[in-house]
Image 1 (cartoon, rainbow, N blue to C red):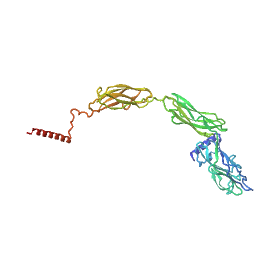
Image 2: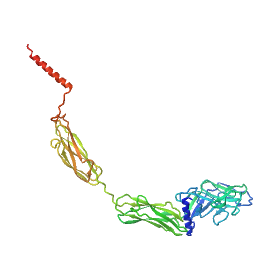
Image 3: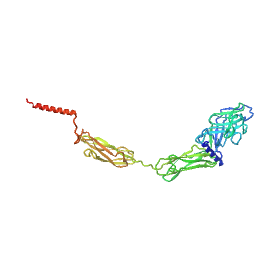
Image 4: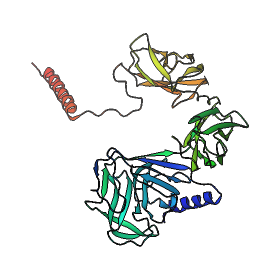
Length: 472
């Protein structure tokens, strides 16, 4: 036996053991008859009744609580049905009062997530002679079906072509035949509808919110109200909290409980959830209330409500930006001075003023002869994230020399922290030709062609001297 069936039967037995009775009713209405074929008078035995053109199948069955959700059409819900009644417009069959000739072929129903029936295959019958049986082949039987899955039919004075034990009841006709003169039959197309007639609970709001507070606890109240009372039996449902982005224990207190309404009552019932205050800045958080285990009532349009815990703590201040200084390069020029530009940048927009100091320091370049030593201050106002620049004067000359450099360092940062680099290098590139070799350095060795020129020049000079010394 399926787990859902065992649980449903246990709940049903508990309900009836406590004196309650069925109070959840499912109503069925078929499309109008598509075809009607009636018997040919005279009719000497059985149910000699015409079926009415323009009629259809109507009926109902009851259970002690709503059907489980998400049933399949192959699921037999007969053990959950406490009473039923179906009519074909001319004949009515009912479970009450109990009769020995009434048979149930099975109640099969598929349900949605709220337990509403979306498909059904239901057939009930009676032996036309009114006897309990046993019955022989071709005994007359009346049948009514409540089908949404494919077409359905009803028959009076059908010929039973086979019997079996169904649901523990023997002598149940499971195969129906017709007789041209004595059988009345009607068929209807697919499309029958089921309506659940039971009180349904509704949340006063499907989404509630409250600020958490800075300390202690506060209560978020959910209200559940049935849309109508139950006339004769108590109604109840269970509820529980379920974590979302909020966590039970730290953000709120987990809870479970049962709401009950006595017969004739539909007053609002409260679900109270305790919220925990803190001073930690964080995003809004949420949890849900879930309703389940409906007794004497059916699920409403929604079985969940959301509780949102609103953050009321100031957000943590944004970290201060970092400041980074870049390098700079400039040709020195042949005279006068030119300006080398350094750039300082922030990593993010400051929320408060940022200030710093900068100053130069010698490297291979010397203050006074190669550049002018300098210091200064940079400032950003709150909201200003544009790059800031400053300049250092470079002295020009015509002396060939190697490239030279100095440094600029940032200090006394306020409102910002050091970034990737707070020291920039200023490089003064030489633009005065090749510098002389360093003293004591290695002299360049003439190439082969240079030796040839030197040798030829010396030989020519010697020859000229000899010619000048010859006597006339």
